Image (tube, rainbow, N blue to C red; front, top):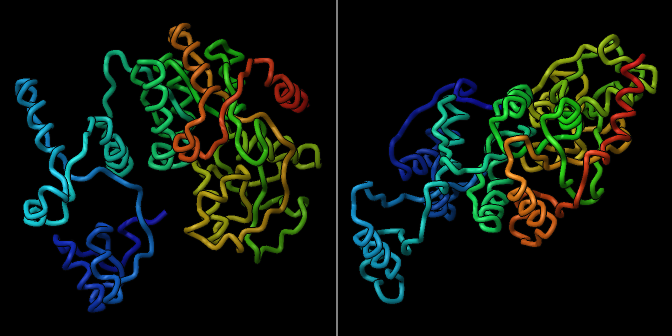
Length: 380
């Protein structure tokens, strides 16, 4: 929620050491530089207040016309460089411990960052890439960090290259899946039901996430200083939601409040926040009276804000967790392998990154209870 316009002055010093020294000299209040350079000045009093997502180091690239044999020999030579055998050489190179293998997809996280900042999309998909659209519940960088390891796992297990497609927003996700631009989708149950009921997708696995398993719920939050202490006090207030298509950031609260005598469209002033983080931050900054988010979303900002200033006013009933679904474009044989790979996923690195416990087999019928709850109130 912060950009360069929020600062009084912004200077580009071009060298990271100059940035560190300028902060230590109190010419600047804060600065951005690599963790490697910042670490050199910790003992001098420099304080690291936030570390960004990890990005690849400098890379050595070869042009397409270079013979494969030459590339192979270059890689072998570079990978053989190590601290034990080439101490003097590495010392001369400064701050380099050696070289590691790299692939083009390792730089997709940078492409996502560029897209976030400029809107320019440099993400590339091969002719045989299998595309998985993921609902943009959080920022593109957060989603990439969480789920790119899962894509790499599926690539390894199935023999096909799996890559993420991260839409701009919920509406863009809906459009991408509806137009058949991807083979698989990963979304909340509300969007799943809307797309499945029109024949666009079918669920084949569901997410297991601690501590609630294959179910989750939404919450209604206010600032700790807010005078709102009861649901009825929400009437007439400014309420920020994640999206009208969000399950944990709108639908669950909408149905819950209807059963408590409150019509969100009639009784509340609804503001679309687009992201879980935006809702939480706006409640935290007292820019809105209350917010609707998924219960687990608070953990995303636990290092950025004082969660003690956020009050949970109410919790909704549980609803089914996020399903993995296939589209008409998906190859049935690949889908079978994906299902087997997801259900059998035990790699703790992949699970930890995605912040889930695993996947279980699922079918469209698993979402019938939620369908009935939605239709019950749609008739009113």
